[in-house]
Length: 114
Figure 1 (cartoon, one colour):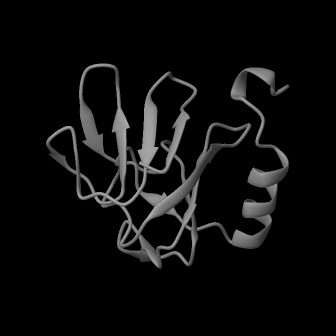
Figure 2 (cartoon, one colour):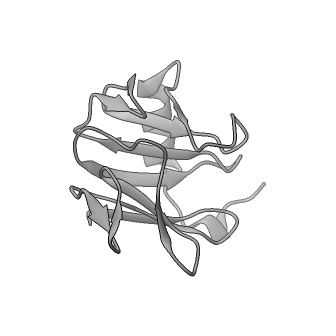
């Protein structure tokens, strides 16, 4: 595992270079709900090296991947649990901007103001 973050609901997300997590098939990204691991959508095709949660609760992942959830995503992908209930990633329209925002606002979630 190369990256960890906590979602607003308390779930833990782990990223890295792995194909299973806790015995569950997961492509480089997985979610722990306090009881069990589950894949985060179809995952990524290469390593996830950074994870961050934006102020609105969306998860942003950065890494060496070129696809996330089967969709083109060059190095940056963004998850929105509200999208379709399947944890499907949507690629940020402006991935460079999303990456800069993650770097700029990389404080622990508990210190962020809403």
